[in-house]
Structure formats: structure tokens, C-alpha cells
Amino acid sequence: MFQYPAIFERDPKAGSYTVNFPDFGYGVTQGATLADAEEMAADLLASLMMDCMETRADFPKAGKSRGKVIRQVALPVLLDAKANLYVAMRAAGVRKAELARRLGCQKSQIDRLLDFKNSTRMEQMEAAFRVLEKKLVIEVQNAA
Image (cartoon, rainbow, N blue to C red):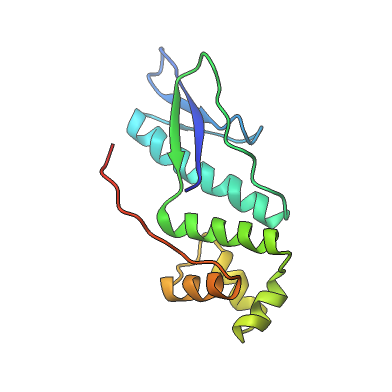
């Protein structure tokens, strides 16, 4: 599961929160309340990871920031599966065109498969992992 530490800084005057992910080195968001800031942080994390995918970069390793208010922010399950497919493709040295050939589909379908803004059926994700000799596993855990 992709999860990154985020720094939540409260502005005492406005009462709002500013959020950034130090592991990415750029990007900031804010929310009027802590709940808003958490929601915006999840959106920012998805945007930062999409940016890595678009530039064909590796995702940064999740680190820790000392002395700051840290909250772990995770991707939603489907986006996490898409991010893991991207990592699996890079590890196997398989480009989109090759994955499309293996799946017997158009490259544009692979673009949609990896697009965080596109809804994807789990069957499609499972098929993509299968041709990469991987298995998609979903686990249910108690809420923290």
C-alpha cells in the first residue's frame, strides 16, 4: 500500500491547515479544517504520484520528517492498485505497448488502466498483473 507522511501545519490565526509531502519535494495544499486538509492531502498525493507516472519517474521512498505534525496519507485502493501496476511494469521493463500486446488490447486501454482519473474494473487490473506474473491481493483490516 502506498502511504506517505504528510506535514500538517496549522495557521493559528486562520485556523486552517497547510499540507505538504516532504518526500516529493514539491506540492502543497490546504484545508479550512483538519478534515478538509486530510481530504485535500489525499488528492495532492494522487496528483504527485500521477506526475511521477507521467514523467516516467520512480515514486520516492516514504520517509519520516522529525519535529513536525505528521499524518500518514494513503491512496484509495483502486489508485493504489494502479500505482502498483506502474511499479510492476517498471520492474519488469515492460512498456505500455508491450503490456497492451500481452493483453491483446490497444495501448490507449493501458493508458486508461494507469490513469488515476479513469475508473477501472478490478478484472482488468487482475489481468494486467497476471501477464506480469503478479497477483493482485486485497486485504481487509480493522480501521485505526
